[in-house]
Image 1: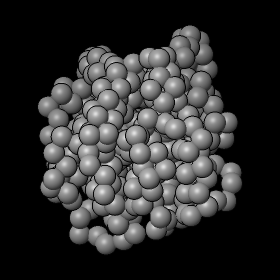
Image 2 (image 1 turned 180 degrees about the horizontal axis):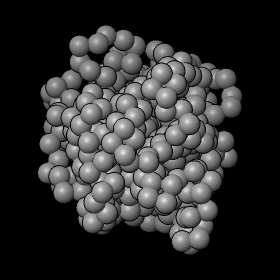
Image 3 (image 1 turned 30 degrees about the vertical axis):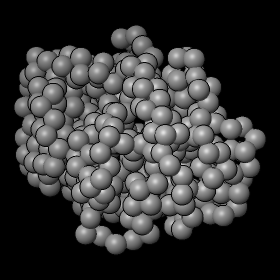
Length: 377
């Protein structure tokens, strides 16, 4: 099977970490190991965007390579304000009538908001031969947006996008020393783009709460600050200054994958108070679970996932005192930290990339059969 993966920002040199970029590359590798032929199309450094010029290049590639599957990894901000994107399924299938078009939705805009990205989503939902979502909340949103998806809709979670590279106890202690972690201190960590939905205001307030309750905690943020996030990060830094917490925060920026893995292993707790709650679409949190880090996260009221209950310490959204209280409890309860770490590591095995690649192949085969059996207009 020949599969063309499209990702909004494909950056093979990994000059900046992007969870969807990393996920797509790992999925492509897993599919290749499973015997499929995979090509990747994206944009990192050119200025074509996702308008008509990119479409023309894609149609040329489709005619020349004749893929069985085009699989678009959709996250709205990666495709900008392209009015052509909703037409990709129909136009590419005109270029190769035997292929199927698949879209994975990595996020959904709330139904009440009107925008170009909502139009993009509806066009991709209606035009795709198969639609993949990564969690139950997005499944429900997709069904509300287009009620007749039926058997075109599949739920396939994402996998962790940073592999674990083991470090020695001495290396771990050296990293903690560089961060300034006290002997009985608690190193909190978060990974990925420091966006507004990461809930970093609550992290800073919870850090202040923990330190006020005699827990010598620090917070480490790993991840590139994109231009679009600079104003938010500046406001987080101002809050840290106001609360006198800046000296306990480490902004480490974008790092190579092996260093990210080492930093995660050097930390004590992964703190993730997402403003919309945690779900298994969050690749950075899945990385934390795979690295054996206790995960403290906000609950997603729209997505009931019972398998998470024993593996995650949940707190309410927008409640930094509750978050701080859990961190204080975990600081004084290493046995509970160990239990959460082990439960999270077991949960992470459900997102093994080889198993997920097998589920993709099964979905692709159904999509091809559906596309080739469907009457053409």
